[in-house]
Structure formats: structure tokens, C-alpha cells
Length: 176
Figure 1: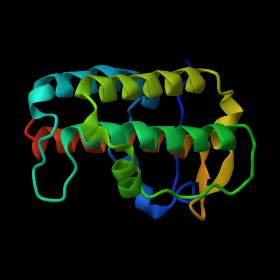
Figure 2 (figure 1 turned 90 degrees about the vertical axis):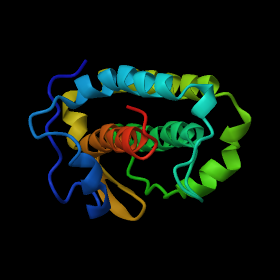
Figure 3 (figure 1 turned 180 degrees about the horizontal axis):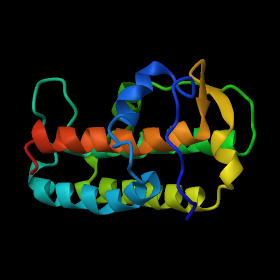
Figure 4 (figure 1 turned 135 degrees about the horizontal axis):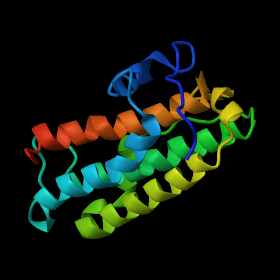
């Protein structure tokens, strides 16, 4: 795995993403957290099981199953952006609408274990990719959703986005 990856500075990401980056304490090891989240997500989902996979804490909110599917979809998008930028590709990358993705995916037709397995596979692929990125590539910048972003910011966003949704699953869905 790579050595410590410094926390991104303002200007390396759109301000919207600060909330995800801020989920990680200043002294945290983002790569270790990337790996440890495999266990954190599995533990929270074990509390839900198939019996609570369709639970929504409010009208119009995603089910537990859809949250996990959203995590897989979002990580794919963010990891793809990270790869392109780390490889020096300066092509601007488009945004995506997470609600459209969840609707189109029909996660509710699948067992929670299958959706969780998909997220785990995506996360393992992200870990493998991160382990091969050269140290100098983390500071490379590109454009995504019409804003400048660095490779290292994308890694922090991936981890912080998962932390955000773990918190929502624990509190709003009462999976503690």
C-alpha cells in the first residue's frame, strides 16, 4: 500500500465535497480507513439482514439496500475519476445524478447480500488500484463535474462518503 497520503487542501476539490473529507480526522490514515471500512460496512449490514433491507426511515428516502447500491455506484464513479486523474488524463469528466442511478439500478429486486457483495468487490478493486498509484500521482489534478479536483481528494471523498452513509445507517436506520 502507498505511504501516507496527505489530506487535500481547499482548492483541490469543490466545496461541496468538504463535508465528506471532514469525516476523516486530520491525523487519520485514509488508506487504512479505506480497508477497514470493509469490516465496518459488513457489521452494519449484518444488523439489517434481509429482514430490514427494504426499510426506509422516511417517505422518499432510500432503503438500506439502495444505500448500499448507491455506495457501490458512487465508488465506481469516484474511483474511475481517481484513476483517470492519477494517470494524467486531463479530459473533463461529467457529473452524475445519484438518484437517477438508484432508480435505474432496481436494487430492491436483489437480495441485500448480493448488493453488499457488489459493494465489497468494488471496494476491493479500489484498494487494489490505490495500492498501485505512484506517490507523485496523488497531487495530479483534473476536472470533474465542472470543478478542479485532485486524485488524493477523490480518495478522501470515497472514504468520507462511505463514513457519511455509515453514520446515516447507524442513526437514521438505527443499525447500531
